[in-house]
Image (cartoon, rainbow, N blue to C red; front, side, top):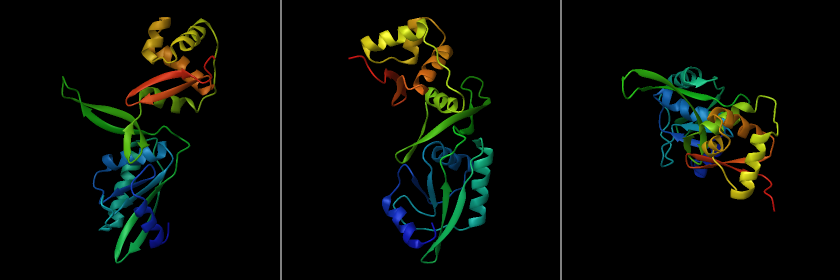
Length: 222
């Protein structure tokens, strides 16, 4: 992006899966959530110096903002996320465009701290965020595991546990991780490994409804 015409085109499109507006950036931890979400989804542009109502307010200090972004991408993203910046001038105000490509290293985790509700001690928290419309939403553990497994070779087998799954899906059409774990009497972790392998092999499909996941056959019996 190098022209004010392109800037206005992006602003006119409004916030969405690939565009976010920020009036200003002051918290590395907060902006890191957006950086992670864009890198984990299909990439995008964060326009800093643009208000939610599309007004161009500009940035006061490009250098300070870039320093915050660098801290966000290295300290609060694991692995770190690469980004590029471009300054676009419009009527005497500078907008900082932060360009984030879809990453080959996903999933990227957002690092933060929360407090244990019992001891009140700070404990580290790692979450995978995805871009969902104009929002950053936390991925479920199964979705994050599926993303991570893409880096490994697909290994599947068709034993009793798998055949039981296929029979169940033929009859009832959908199943959750916990239902499958109980069905074949194995741990959730082992059940997840089987389900993720079958998703990657194209045999079953993973669906997300809100914060819940379920699985269906890709080619149901007719």
